[in-house]
Amino acid sequence: MSLKQVLQATRWAWRRLGLFLLLVLLALSATGEGPPPGALSTSVDRIVAAVHFDFWDWETEAIWGKFVHWLLAPQRYMREPDRCAFVRDYVARTGQIRNLRWQIKMVYADPQVENANAATAQMRAEWARLRDQVTARQPVAEAIMEEQTGLILAQEGLGFLGQPFPPVGVRFTPLPYILIVSPRERIETVHQQELEHGLDLAQQEAIEEQVDNALDVSSLVTDIGGMSAWPAMVLEHPNLAWVLEVAAHEWTHHYLALHPLGWEYDRRHEARTINETTA
Figure 1 (cartoon, helix red, strand yellow):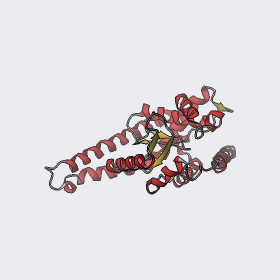
Figure 2: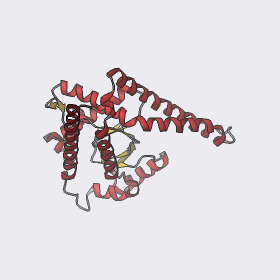
Figure 3: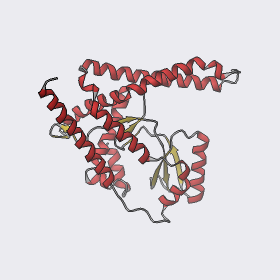
Figure 4: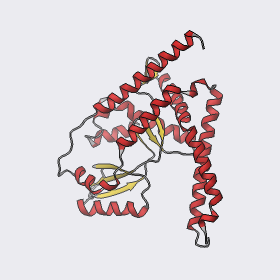
């Protein structure tokens, strides 16, 4: 490697480090006044405390993972056709995992199967093999999609010095559920709370019943397609177009967070509605 290449690589690494530190500073500086003890949000939070999604633990791990990958960035040395093929292969493998998981569940749900563990042993081994492959490929696939999405955004004028700002950030992860609370007499989101992933249907219904009875509201626990943390939480999905659409949707929330419409997202229901419609 020539001296010029070394200097270019060093400058690139320092720019990445500076951007990472800026994002951390923005996250740490985001403060807000807590609700009064008698507020609806406080009451809901107390009810679901045991299954509350720990956002900051997830955020710390995700940002650190992005930072480590930024220092290496192996996708920078891949040709564009290879980058596209890599992403398509990654998404195809997630589809295979999804299908295998469904087949395994069907075997366990079949009352005619006497030994579900034995019947699914081969499928579970294949699932584990694919899961390891996808986990190893995930950082590179995320980085390629981030760069491709960012290039389009910059071309549309949504950037700074030729780069999208804030930068596109995507993290494939099991998504939390979301608890939506509305008054009984009308449909309006007055509070929402993220819950840990993996809740079964009985647990979801129990939470809804407890919140409804305790606070005289109407609540719903439901899935979400993504979450505009940074990096954005995106569900693994075998449809690449859907994945990219969600990534762009969540980036729009990141962009609006730097403008007045985003500042009011958690304070005014009208701003939240406009924000979601815009995204």
